[in-house]
Amino acid sequence: MKKKIVIDGGKKLSGTIAINGAKNSVVALIPAAIMANSPVTLEGVPDISDVESLTKIIELMGAKVERQGDTMMIDPTGVKSVPMPYGIINSFRASYYFMGALVAKFGESVVGLPGGCNLGPRPIDLHVKGFEALGAQVDNNFGAMYLKTGEQGLQGTHIFMDNVSVGATINVMLAAVRAKGRTVIENAAREPEIIDVATLLNNMGAKIRGAGTDEIRITGVDELHGTRHSVIPDRIEAGTYLAMAAALGEGEGITVENVLYEHLESYIAKLQEMGVEMTIREDSITVHPVKDLKMTKIVTYPYPGFATDLQQPITPLLLMANGVGELRDTIYEKRVNHVPELARMGGNISVEGNRVIIQGPSKLQGASVKASDLRAGAALVTAGLIAEGTTTVYDVEHVLRGYDKIIEKLTSLGANIRLEDCEEGEYIG
Ligand code: EPZ
Image (cartoon, rainbow, N blue to C red; front, side, top):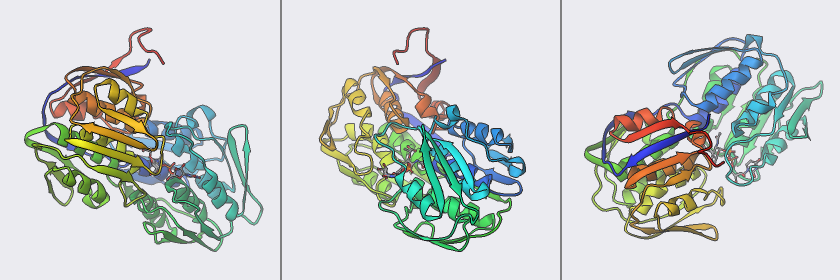
């Protein structure tokens, strides 16, 4: 049954919410965990549909999974190398981490080509280049990737990433930890989630140095054992709520707990440039009510630059600011499907070439809108909270992939928001 989110907007919010573990970390940690020869416990696992899909996949492979609150116990001892169930695996992009994890563990893997958000082309050529450099043979047969190594297995090597890729960096790291000898990954991505995966792997017995820098050095090991690991907070979820807080906070303002300031420096600097005042503590941030927002210019870059995943969630806040602003996503130029939906809500926003032009302040009116992808959906929820009147967001399955308990969290801040089933025939796909 398709779901929708219904919001009666225009209400000010206040209170405290806690951020969960990082989706873009946990979608790699779970495939990494099955590389161990004994149980792995992950703490701080968010309750999101991508985690449900990953749990189903590793159980199909023979792993035993137990969930207690946000703790996930994975016993990988029964895991056998089987072709991935195409249906599930095609539901989101990060399923491609099974390529690296399984070819490292079994010397072979069969993985359905990734699905995930429609942000424009999502190639995996850098992943394939890395696996081939490590000595794997990679074939793309009718939408499934077949990886196979010769009897000599994976061999350490020197890989230069043609462009900075989070997924390719993590995937090649997963394969390289079991390759014979030394691997160097140059021009590696530096996202905090990469450090989180490297920390888990090192605690499982891997030998990885330099994660978080643009050069990662790995010495292969023969086996990986179980461990316990705590997932880093989700910096994108945190940034999304900081934008909502700046847009709608009143009174005491809104405090976001379990957030690491150092993972959001470029984003927080932008909010401060816009006139947002915050109290920043060791692991929480309080956003104080904002009097008048100043417009700004945003360009996204790989970490530690302004994150592409936060350009959509901050856009409704830009619509409230005074002046003409612009936003350019250098990573996904086509990540603009939220723009026409925001325009339908009365936003003075348009796409001109590879830039989004924003004229503020725009008075937003409630409307029926569609979420085209995860962060676009988050932007439409934020716009619905701001807009006068009722907003209905369709295709919210995208939002539920990455925002744990978003309805409960916003309700606790005073929002009038609910998740409902679509009526028969109500949804026009
Ligand atoms: C990760 O995707 C995140 N997903 C994305 O978050 C995020 O937007 C992206 O990194 C950039 O930060 C997960 O971590 C699960 P990339 P990923 O490889 O790894 C090109 C969200 O909203 N490229 O860093 O797929 C690619 O087209 C999601 O949570 C190649 O050309 O992104 C893009 O232009 C959306 N060849 C650029 O590199 C490749 O083989 C960066 O992509 C791989 C990527």
